[in-house]
Image (tube, rainbow over all chains, first blue to last red; front, side):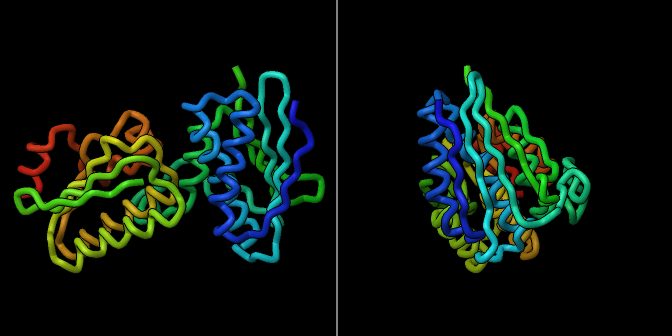
Length: 138
Length: 113
C-alpha cells in the first residue's frame, strides 16, 4: 500500500501538467484502470487549481500541500491551501445563471464532483481550506 | 489534443480529438478561434466526436470562443459530443448556451441560415 506521500507545490500553474502525470502514475499503481485514470487526474487537478487560485491567490510563494494515501478499496487525496475559502459557502455547487454561467467560477468544483465519487470541502486543524477527494478502488 | 480545420459550405469546421485539458495545446485552440473571429469566417462548427476528456480550462476556452464569436455576430455549434462530454455540458449548464447537433449536414444547414 502506498501511504504517506506528501507533495508541497508552489501555486504556479506551469507545474500542473507534471503533477497530472504524477497523479496518473499513482492511480495506475494503486489499481485505477487505464480508462479511468485520466478522470482521476482531471478531478485532482481541478481541486489543486482551485486551491492555487482561490486559496492562494495564484501566489507562487504560497504552497498547496497534497497528501496521498492508498487504503484498502480507496485512493485518498487531501489538498490543503493557505486560504479559508469554502466553495460550498461562497460558490455553491450549482452553476449560476446568465453572466455567472459564462464565468468560469465554480466550474472546476462541479467537474471534480462529477468525476470523483467523493469530494468534500472543509477546514484543516489550522483553519485553512482542506479538500478531501476519495476515489474508490475496485 | 489534435486540431483540424476546414471550411465546409462557408462554415469553419474545427475537429478536435484527444484530451481538451490544461496545457499548451489550449493556446493553439484559442488561436484557432481567434483566427475564425478575425477572418470574419462567421460561424464555427466544433466537432467533439473524438474528444474523450475535457476539464474546466478546456470548457473555458470553448465558452470564450463562443462569446467572442457571438460578439462579432457569429455562432458556434457543437457536433457529436460524446456522452461524457455532453454530461459535462449538462452539469455545468453550458448545454443551455451551446447549440448541439449529432448530424453534420443538419448542423451546417443551421449555421448557414
